[in-house]
Length: 397
Image (cartoon, rainbow, N blue to C red; front, top):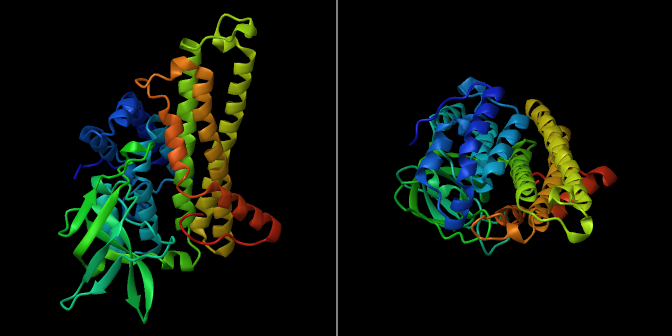
């Protein structure tokens, strides 16, 4: 396990993120093209201390605001959105630990996070309705539990020291969803890098199998219970997804500026010598700038509302946070796709050589924005404002 720095404040977290992003941006196109994450890049990310910035102060962390957490994520995503997605579930798990873990569990796993441990995820399963899990925990005669099941979309699991697994176990005659923290090297755990999506290529969002895996009692925290009552677990997970999309858009626009200034040719009817003086191109950049500014403002607003809800969670405050984050996700979805498309449109044919890898912004945006459908964000927002109905409580809103 890599030894990590411990970041002490929001300002330090942002400064570290900017320094790290400068390093990560240089090799982003090559990593995407080769579908390889060099160990030294991941080690640098872990050692930076950024994976521990949401740990509560009571346990030695910086407990940065959600505004800062989202901004850090966007900064990294602008450099390499696939790398930025790796800690998304890590931060989600730390929030689930905050709202549902015992003090002993919080001491253990927060301490691991501050020392550089990475938590992956094994939440999703293929071929079934969402939230119906076949992965199960059954009690063992000598104590503890046996875990069996298969998962997919296990982002970050292959690079993790611990894999939190969403599983069902029987409690009082009914199945209850829990989260089992499983060491990556525990006997019976197999993680396969079979992710072949055309975007977010180095997230290693492939499959994991758990066969007769022994799980200790102290490794299990509530999962379903985090949504049976009002908590901020769902909107926190979602604001990080919004921040990844914002970062993709920011990276695409920065690449488009460079491409148009240095390589693109003006259209013959524009009557100008440089593509950057083409009035229609200028208009398109103005449009992107407005959309980007609006998306960032919505994320910052959502982060402030989420901070308030964390301090005083109830049905109303958590619903307000979920809706605010959904609004941000709507705009970051559309602007990331638009920016990736406009980079190629305005950059022209000179933007299309495979060696440049400029298509990765659109591919990454299109892939990542499929995580949960934006059309249901509109529904939740509209139902809240039109009918006064609170959004459902789960990790996708």
